[in-house]
Length: 114
Image (cartoon, rainbow, N blue to C red):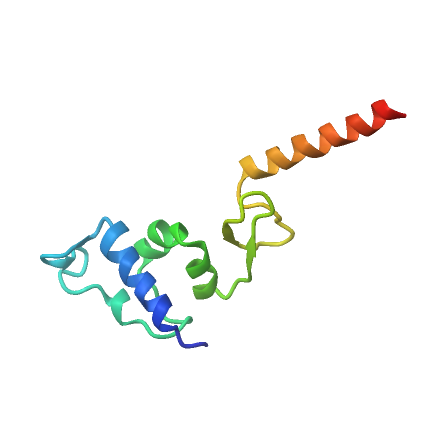
């Protein structure tokens, strides 16, 4: 259990206020009819709002990895950060297919030169 940094808390606040469909600045969280309790979390093992965890948190891969104690990798194609799950080297299927096309072109080019 690690304590969240000030920057991580700011990112959570920004995600809730700008991306959460259940949050309105006039009344707070519609589900709780009060202030969103995501503003008060302080540790990585804290209980998260289920909607926030499923729908909003994936928008910020680094914060998602920090809250779920996953390592963070950088995509070899676009440089975007993503939560590493296993041997995954690329952030998306688009980046993976792009690299596959490049490797295939290079392999065919070498084969033609022989």
